[in-house]
Length: 174
Image (tube, rainbow, N blue to C red):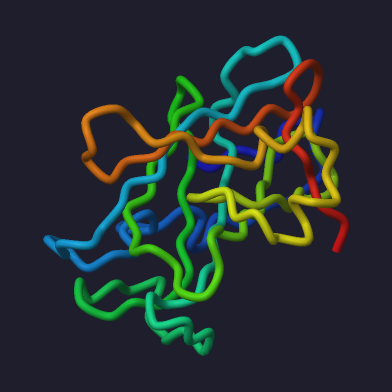
């Protein structure tokens, strides 16, 4: 039985394609260059935020930005440049992708229950010395945009998103 939109949120919402099977599998299965980006979405008290929705955009490894249709119906081969993943009950999300070409980051859009507008940020897989956006961010806050390589060299990075408070992620105005 369907239920209505909770009274504390703006709605109604329609669940078509939110999320969808394979939404976090941007890299073809078994690809040797695949990287995993994972982390938690946390509120101002550091508590996990369940059912947040993260969208990722990125260029292909060759730097092309055209993307390819098919994100909602993954074929396991085609790299589309777009992924959508929801956080679990513990606020954790995971994305399997390929390293972006031409830029050191993935663009991230975050949808969270209770926020009337979505938030934009970036997840940098490397810290380039000449990135204009990073250079414009106060040094003490730059770390909130940097994904941290996981120990063990398994091509995995951790990127937590903090919505408020100490260590709040830098969000972008677009």
